[in-house]
Image 1 (cartoon, each protein chain N blue to C red):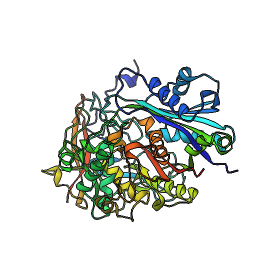
Image 2: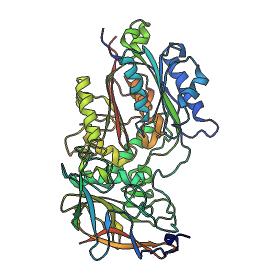
Image 3: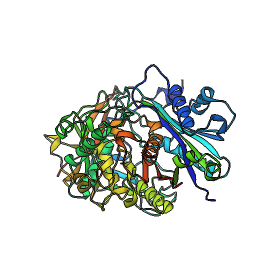
Image 4: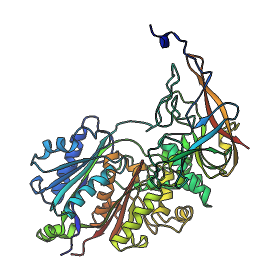
Length: 399
Length: 140
């Protein structure tokens, strides 16, 4: 019998804003629905992986247990920037791989509300300049020595690609957002479900050129959960559960290796390339085998460079790939048919679990209006700055 | 009262915004270069992130550079003037630097690959009258 790990059940809340609820409510809803989806209960769980970024010191896993069942099992509370959710999944995956658990629950949750611009501090008026920190800075440097804000950092990541390769510019980046907004209209769980024209996207207020407002993901609230199960335990379950189960063919987490420019600009490329290479080798498949991809489009400029990092296009060909319609839902490799972070939303801790929910739902043939017909293999990808990259390759069951 | 307490504290007329900016008659950037693999760092490091060696020497970064990437920032935290051109430049000795491109009449005129040259400017004065000196890159 193989030692594969499977997704048995999954769920997510609609992403959006829930001022009347708290993060524990959202996570509990997603967890209970994921267990019900898998036909199991909290009493079947051997381990919990709990992911949240902004409430990472609150014991989120245990707080959720108090709502869904305190059975005394180990809880791993994890945080890994925007890769937090994927890290929670990988924690449970490793527990099952290690033989310490047969079944486990992984969830991610965030309640951000209208948080606005992430990173980049307000300028304080110093009374007396005094050197502090590892750079000996006497004042805040955001806006004086470049930008620390996320739209700007990811704009620069995209513009570096544009510097290296032809056929990439404002229009190509905007087309990414056009696609994802369009895709989101079919997803009832997306935070926003409105299609915009290229003119509207390119004409919306510039945040950090080339990223306009409609090319940036919103902040928001939401939760997602998965139940993972060992091959051995799965084979003891009803045929219908086995038919709906989705195989995790690869689960990879990488950090950023040293590169020359990495000390001044986060490198989101190398660790993605390394993770993709590991994932494809482990799963024994290549990028051409993928029927759909959910990747980390926190900004339009980010999605474009990951076409290349994940091998979805020829080297340097990301501009041509989007221009030719390759990542649209009727294209060669549909990317972010959920609407992506740009329109589905990005409650940070939930994101890496929600993209596993999305791909699983397509592989089961249960994605409704947005279903990619005949999908058998999918890939999920998240990046957390600092940096961490999580990739999962999922395959449809052949039972 | 001790002798130390009665001595007047000498207030500097200028301070660099970060300690890797060297000011005075010959302003320039200086990096901590690994003695083992020549990897360069602007911050204090315990060991080299590339090779693990613990010895570093200070090296001067050349002034001439090329614009490798940029973003024109229109939305920033309160108190930060916008728009400005945030940039990643590659100096002619192969060191990446994050800074603003300064002196452009229209920030949207920034172009990938444009030639740049290191410059300094005053970015504020504290209650002691000390000026803060920052650096940027201007079109060459």
